[in-house]
Amino acid sequence: MAGETDFLSSLTSRYAAARDVFARISNVLNKATFKIKRGAPNETIDEIARRFKTDDYDRLVLRERAATKAGAAFIEEKTQDINRANFHRSAFALNAFTHLFFVDLAAQLSFSFVELKYAFTFANVALALLAHISVRQSYRALLAGPNALPPKRRLWGMFPNPAYNRAVKKNSRSYAQSAWEEKSLFRPAYFINAAVIFLGGQFIIPPDRLIFPFSFIVGKASGLFMTLVMAFDVWRGIRAGDAARTAREREVSVYRDLDI
Image (cartoon, rainbow, N blue to C red):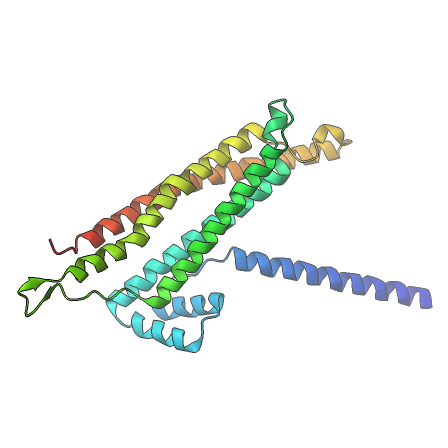
């Protein structure tokens, strides 16, 4: 009887430990792959505050800003930027995992060069870190608010104010950087990832080294996983091109305000 009690106690403690581990993993994944739900401005602000642990003062400032039409549009724009950058972060982290465990281009091309696998893995990790920086930059820009422009002219409107055009050009830099990242960095990276996964897809343990039915199960499951990741990369590459055009349009709209 005592043996059964000890067995049940050990089983319960192991179940509790496993559940705690899964809960922590789920919490980490939730933080890494979140998407801010867009709705009414106050609801969006509450979601942002919950995700980024925004203090009461910044939350109050955001609510006051959302009360104006321009402020609400600015919050909506930055929320979209945060969601897009966070999606890039999750996507490149997924690609890094895929390259590490499911892709071996060198082996498929019949030569030994394991560093190639690690190079693609670390490249995707670097892109995920860059996307993480973009998330933080968009959040800081959200708290800072739209940059207030100085008056176009000075001395009762008789002379142009050079500080005005400098401020307008400064406002356009973030859009230009975003357009460059989407078009020249993220978009090619997605297509390269899709091509490498297509050419070098192979589970870290070749299925032919496993006994049946594990070889069949591993081969089919890894093939399905890589196909989904490859299709996802192609889709994200197309969407990155659309995001680059949107950022470029925002940059051009800022330059329309120049006093020429």
